[in-house]
Length: 568
Image 1 (cartoon, helix red, strand yellow):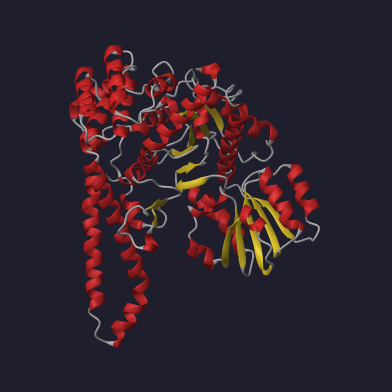
Image 2 (image 1 turned 120 degrees about the vertical axis):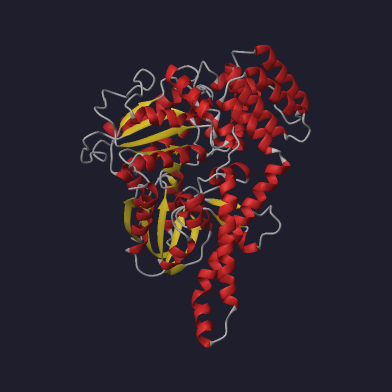
């Protein structure tokens, strides 16, 4: 079973057994959870005629006793208080309460005491406390994601809220899949260790009865990693369709905001980019940019053929056929114009920012040695007035991560040049990145130059050549998954929590990256699952990153660190 179908199944079960006209009431997080797996037209088919947010419905006093209220909320103190107020003066005919995670006993008592009018028909826990963006990729959309970079003493309460949300999300995934895992974590990360131990405590002590599912021969594995072990992947430009759209335009809950593009019609200012709802996107989401252009041309040709046949209406039968096929025709038209617009817009950005030149240097920095040539290439791009500030910053960050120990003098020259060329550059940001994610802090062999096997593999790749110079980089996650498949993930680097050990190779692995995932990594997971059916990987994270979001988190973390004298 995959995550999208688990989440869809929960929404189905909420809506199908309640007959009649309904209002669906969500909070700011469950609205994302539902929107990625259920379309508006599907909600209408289930007789949902109104979707509201719980905090805005509190403000309204209008009676709607003809509607049945279906609430789907996270079990937070704030949401329980909203419900308490709403149940004191019921506006709807019936109340059906569903929560996305485990309710505390005290919360159940509050709800029972508040239901004086006996309007509540049912209270249930449906464990869809994650945003299933793709079948094997989920996110938690945690707004204060930057907090993972800071020591616990800086802001203990925000850090605790962050950890609680991660533990809740990961627990819900395992409850939805009806599994209890053994847990491992990245040894060099305090936050990964803390989350792993808190998750273990919840699953094996506090709620052990809830997680007591039928045992599988080999327990599933939960591996908790830290984004800082691979800071390269979120800094790179992307050249496969889904990852590129997120990097250059931005994807939020499988939707792309196109308001800034003038030529788009009003009804398509926001378009859906979902592998579950768009067959062309599903077939092409992992293809590289060159192939996408060819495939879109084929899509346009097919559409033109359909358009021509629609113009040839001569009889009543032709007219009836056209009317029957019109909804499909409209859908096809919308789909074609969506993909053409996205690719056209991205091509424009690639040209404006000279991303082909920039990306070639990025890939060389990430994948190949040659410090002298790299320094020269980065220096030339820093001196080029047509290169944007953010691209200059990313190039220096990548150079610093690669050569921090090899060339301190040249690194200093690049810092100075960056500061003089980029007005928006916040001084010390690259140094802060090295302090956070430099070579001394990392566990994995990020550049393939520590481990003899990785050095040999890189040499072999270099000799064979790479299919595409822009997509030669592989995330560190690829190596990690390979190690798990071959049973080579070292206990000393990724210790087990508690007295659990794994006999044999796990068949189900959930990898959670504290600090966020990327679409390049989710592509890696999907390809791994397709090529290795004996083991299934699912990827999750606190957010879905592009370079803009990763740098923003870094800046926010640096700002908080500077304002807290204890860690500057």
